[in-house]
Amino acid sequence: MSIKLDELDLKIVDCLNKDGRLSVTDLSNRVGASRPTVTSRLRHLLERGALKVKGGLDAKSLGFKVATVGLDVKSEGERGRVLETLRNCPRVLSVYRGLEKASLALFLWGEDEETLKSTIESYQRLADGGLTYTHYLGTPLHGDTLIEPCMEKSEKAHCGAYCPNCSSYQNEWCTGCPSTKFHKPTFLTG
Image (cartoon, rainbow, N blue to C red; front, side):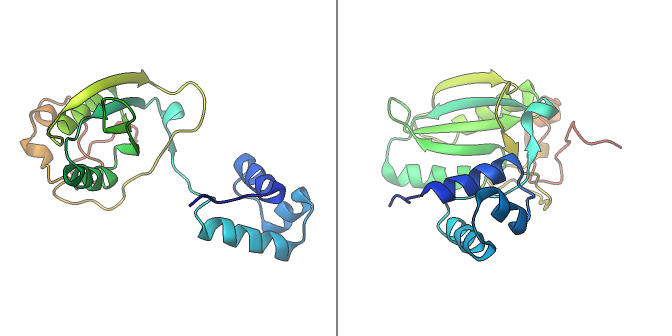
């Protein structure tokens, strides 16, 4: 199901992209439409999922590393299981259905290269076909790559991993899963 947008929708999104903190009044003035019209358009854009308004940590500013990874998952049932695990992983920014050898393509992040490598190694154990490719991209040079902070902490990661049992974590090659109380973020002060 595709969503159709018109010129006013695009003007609203463009203004919010430049300054997501605009009031409805300021937004109305900038796009040349009434407050009720802009409010209605915003509601519809949000309800249909065409507009996302969120905050996050900027990967570029914090020097985080990103990579793309291809996973080969042999069966449709297995793909669903792996996809559910990946949806809950705080290191996965997005997942795509692969078009070539990889049946799933991932875009992920880590605070540093070691953490990113450790994360990628853990994903290899998820899929019955394993990794088909890994592209380390480094720190973003342009564009917004937003990282959602995990404020709720648990003993185990969503995938069932327990950081203290992981050799990468024990050897300080990985900062740990951001969703666990064992995470040691390198970007926090004090």
